[in-house]
Length: 277
Image 1: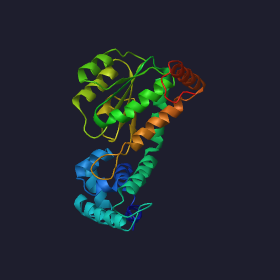
Image 2: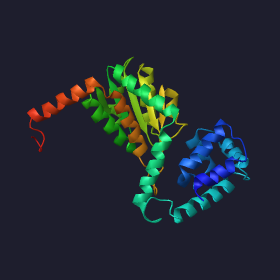
Image 3: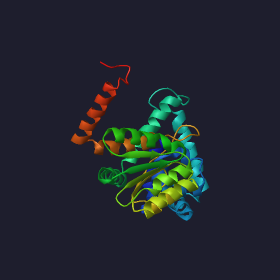
Image 4: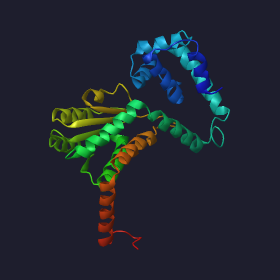
């Protein structure tokens, strides 16, 4: 039995409310994470409180979260052993990672996320300047947005250096500007402070995070929640990069194509590329 089938069997017995549905969605989209997590970690990922996680487990027929987690773990490990992967066996990490990323990207495409992505693109288009801040692993998706967004003709600047330098850059923002913050796993004090400062400066704030309950949402106009379930102990950034690509697609218009062509010509004139025609 797959995790999806197991969960469908349990949810068919009861009507879940909106918050319980959030918990169920985490079980379905991040079974590896859920099968080893505490009720508090599930609550944080779902954007609900711990008591909601416990009540959801009881609605699904268990005495509490530990009982649900134990059965979920059994089902998840059995599905892995049964070959719930496109190629190879349970030890084929590459195949498992590709399948998990497929699930993550599909889970990203909610109505709320799509609207937040479109709104972020509109904010970039109208902004005098867009500043991108992050810490740790979030710097990867931040670089993609900064590099390709600038090629499309938008004033997008990366603020990924020391916190003191980031603070100077954010302090120059003003009303009508845009700040985009990327946060994965643990939240640093500096990133939270920078996001708050941007909001106080009147900038439009968009946040990419893996947690619905992220403290950064307090200062955000738009929040994109991206699954980061990976294989092993590390996160996967694929869904977050896919969200960045969605924004870039919204920024791609006639002006962007013309600007990109001009930059390509500059590179050629300066003889920067080894594959010049």
